[in-house]
Image (cartoon, rainbow, N blue to C red; front, side, top):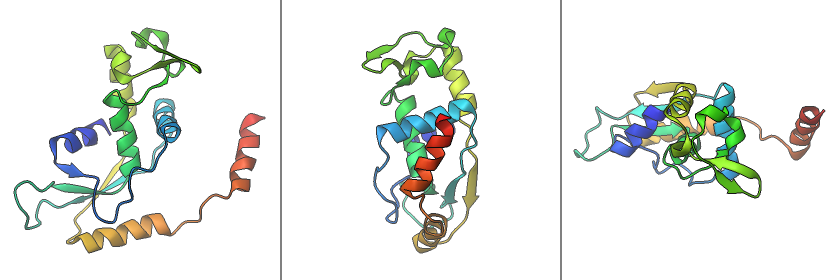
Length: 167
């Protein structure tokens, strides 16, 4: 995942295809992804289209994210010190400094030791499914297949799961 952030920062990858939604995850949703990564929870694959064979200008990104924009943005914000998470999520020897908040000490990526940053980078392995779709229209069709085929969790479903988690 950290590699995808690097591709994004170099301009080799775009998150902003016309079918994509905006920046919709809250800070808490981003933190929960970081927590999942740290706990080793399997994260769904990011779907990327290889556009390197498309006729385009030299400045166009080589790849486009079809699915996974919010996940990539969450990791990007963390590694660029724009997102803090509870320091308790890391072993104390992996934290060099903290930020005091009403919820207790928090940490940014840059506040981690070299070992802490390496630990996160090694844990942030999210599978990437790569395709070679010929047009933005085909990318949008894949986006719809992946994001439009399921059923949203109802409030009751989530409440039930929360009750089980709290027991």
